[in-house]
Image 1 (cartoon, rainbow, N blue to C red):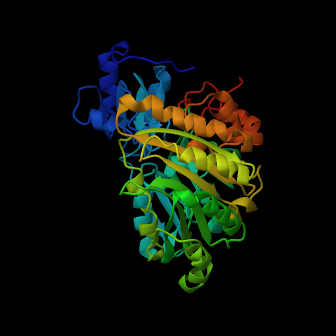
Image 2 (cartoon, rainbow, N blue to C red):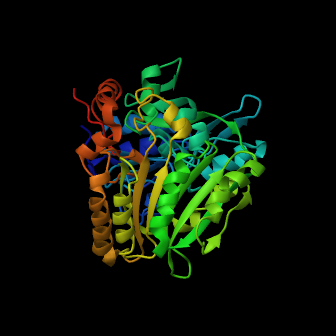
Length: 458
């Protein structure tokens, strides 16, 4: 197993030789840019790595992996740095920072794109939308493409075009032995199966090739209701989503409006013809007496930034989540009661319904196992003052515990915090043992263990 080291545990000449061999930059504590490079989206994370290798390309990643392995370093991998667990950075070890790797090339004729591991979804969408093309990719534009995709990858197009990982055509991955392998349906197919939902357990993905789809303007936005009508809104949402066409993805969220009023919103995106979307959306816009109706035609790129303001970098973040067996009336009662007790106006409770194309894939076809149509509950505590952590985390846990009677015992790996081995097993479900076999093959010493870790058994 890799172990944690301090800077002083390595000979200075060894560090200098490693640094000189990089095309990118090696940062150490005290260097200009070090503090910025060690920060991630979740403000709760305050880790101090010994070394940060800001990789300029695959060759730098290969050098860094070899350096970590040969010197028995704890290693973490940063793409967008957006995951709530903060595994992108480590204390006293080596961070492989892919954020400088922004290469991105669209092939509009083939409707494909190849993007490097440091690209964010906002950057990805900017290039693909120049050709009115897109693929499923998150709901916050500052999220990295690699981490989201390797864990599955939901977004506004998930019901029409499947998960982000369902749209992968190939990946380039630097393995624990320092070798770069291409994985696709035709080449290293076992590894390709594993990276589609298995996270960063098998290596450092330096580039990803996606299938793209024709996506023009969408009909999107949100309808807000007073929280006193929350149960009625959730009951409508349950029936509305069950019969929704695949072009429509909709979430129900408890939030606090900018003027401090608790509301429940249905946020929706229709990615088909706008005139058809107006008909599909009409029941959503006519139910009850909304506080505001903000649904309108917009560019897909704008839809992709709709949640950005609600999830800015630097806030304290603590999440709990689970898939629900069903969105029953009893589950709604608990959810409404707990949302009313929210301890921070920045916190969010969301219910997401997938289904559609994402459910048209067998559970064993990719490493992502959660294929049956079901509701995903995500409880997101956000606040500014670190001294207030206890009360906000307690509210999150109490809300999650109150919903356990309705849980399916499954969890989406990309919304999972640092919650222990049993929860990791729940994230990978029936695919877990096959993933262990892959881990034994590609990373038997568990070099890549700062993730939702699949422990090797060898």
